[in-house]
Structure formats: C-alpha cells, structure tokens
Image: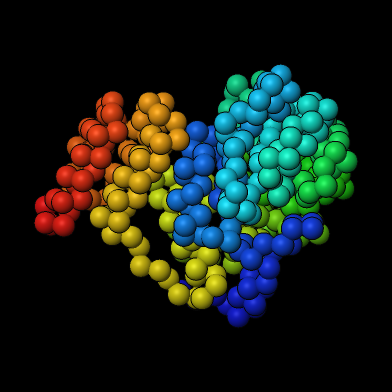
Amino acid sequence: MSLPPSLQARLSQPLKIGSVTLKSRVLQSPLSGVTDLVFRRLVRRYAPQSMIYTEMVSAKEIYHLQELPKIMEIAPNEQPISIQLFDCRPDFMAEAAQKAVAEGAQTIDINMGCPVNKITKKGGGSSLLRQPQVAEAIVKTVVEAVDVPVTVKTRIGWNDAEINILDFACRMEDAGAKMLTLHARTRSQGYNGKARWEWIKKVKQVLGIPVIANGDIFSTEAAIKCLEQTGADGVMCSRGTLGYPFLVGEIDHFLATGCLLSPPTIQEKLQCAKEHLQGLWEYKGQRGILQSRKHLAWYCKGFNGAAELRDQLARIETLEQGLALLEQAITKSRQGN
C-alpha cells in the first residue's frame, strides 16, 4: 500500500483550522462514555500531534451547574484538544463555549450528527439537519462568543429522502464554521450499513474549509482508501478505536512516513487494557471499575480464550479482579495457549 505522490504531498502539509494549525490530519472522534481523560491519554501516547475530542457535553447541563462536569476536564499536556458541545439554543451554546475555552479547548466542535433519540427529540444532534436556520444561528452565535475556531460534526441527512448535506454544509461555512467533519451516514442509518463516502467527496467539492471524513475508518488501509476516494483533508477515527487506542497513531504514522506499523501483539493489547483499567480506577474509583467493563470487553478480540475472558471481565467488581484476569491472559498468551 502506498500513497499517490499528489495525495502524499497534500497530506504532508499542516492542517489549518482557522487560527489553529495541526501537524496531524488524523483526529480522534468524541465518543460518549469513551473519550474521557484516561482514554485520551492512551490515544495521545501513540498520536502525540493529533486533535482529540472530549466526550459530547450538554450545553444545558453546563448552564445549570455551578461546577463544570468532569467530562470537560482537560489535563495540562493534552493539547491539541477540542471540546464538543450539543444543544439547540444559541445562547446556551455560546455560554458553554466560553466555559470550554476557559477550560483549555483549542476549538469548539458543535455536534449536529448524534442520532440518539434522547438527543434528537430535544432538538440537538442530527435533528439540526432538519432545522438549518437554527443550526446557522448556533454557529454564528458561538463564533461571536469565542476567539477560537468553531467546527461542526454532522451527517449526510436525516434519512434517504432528506439528504440535504450540500446545502447544510454551505450554510455552516457561511455561518463561520472553520471545519466540517462528515459522518457519511444518515441519521436513520445509525451505525448500520456502509458509510457513503461519495457524499464526503461532494461536500469537499463545494466547501472552502477543511472537510474531515468519518465513518468506517477501522484501519490504516480504510483511511487511505477513504482519503483517495473523497479528497478529504483528513480522517476522524471513531468506533475503530474502541479497545484499540493505537489506531489514530497507526494512521498518522503511515501518512507521515509511508510505512505501516506492526500491529500490537496480544500481550501489548492486554497490557494496554490493564493500564486502562488502572487509570479508570485512579480517576473515577468504583464508578471507573464499572465503566471499565465495556472497555475491557472491546480489548478482548482475536485470540484464543478471548470470549471467555470477555465474559469474566464483564463481571469484575474490583481492580484486583480485573488486573489478575488480564495478567493470567497475558501469561497464557506468552505460553502460546
């Protein structure tokens, strides 16, 4: 696998998002319940120059809380980092954006793509595709409220009968957005079926701001194929990083060098799982142990005994239980069992 010279030359240049310049064109998507400080630290180890996003934050919750929610916490060495916000009220979004910038966000990302009912029924997420005037007002108001670039993450439309992304994307650029990330599925698709990358190409052709491709980026090979087909300015990794925080760095390494990194061994993956578990315990206590169950299950794929280990890890109650199970699996792997 190799990059065409013209594509390699373009992708070797820094990615400019308004006043922010990134040395990497591979981004880690915001993922609810996943991209907390502990997970981001693991991604950052392998992708030190990539933009990483916090979990999606409710502007309404920030408005009513005296203290910022823990999911907005940013470590001093986390740059470059962005905070993603959602709501349908421009004034709430503007105030939340100001607080996010004060917390350390280098850009503000507005979620206009989340398909989950509890978000869309309140006018947020992908429901904004059906309310382009509201979406415009949100972007304009947030742009006026902060001195960092404002970006948008969205989908191609509400359903197959309402694919309006070309007009919608142009509205977002005109409203002041400095980058658009496009998950190439409709809201009704959820995460089913194939991402329709052809729409990313169409959007790229009508916008002057950077367009980031999202959807079905599960490997370096997929990322390169997507970039070749769409002409996008970069890729954003989402579900491909679940239990695999190596992915962003693997793609970034290939774009920088033209060489594929060797995938992590089973032992390395399980060692990473141990560190993830330990980090969640130290950061969140017992709640972190409960949250770790899903993360640990995602690490347990592609090796003998993975299903049994996954089942055992799904029931852990203590840090010691989880560490012991993972260490046993590492030992078995080294022995070839």
